[in-house]
Figure 1: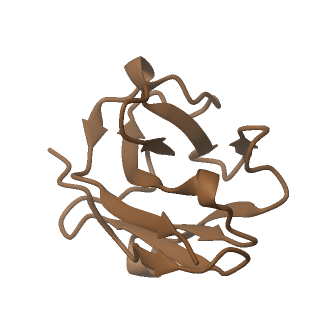
Figure 2: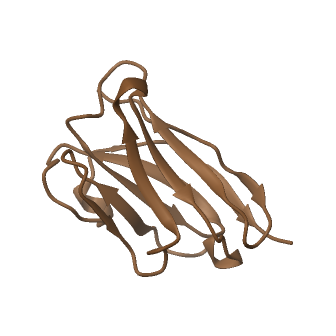
Length: 124
């Protein structure tokens, strides 16, 4: 089964950028849709983006135009490039994999495997 690992989180100033990575060392991610989710303290987990197995993408309105998800097949890694970060983006970010890989969606219950999360803090 998948063992997803997120990396790239940290502290960044408003307006700055971070690139998150989601990787699995043993199983290819090519056959999965990969979603990004985030959860702030006291809040429900919310969908951020999704990239399908055919590289179609979907973004939540709150991040559209600022965040971009992509795949690097050679590295078996999915990225979330986050630009123009705002304090409201502060959260633990999770990547997740969905076996139904041909469609787009960012509902948490649709996803089968989850990473442990990486903290993103946007603050001056």
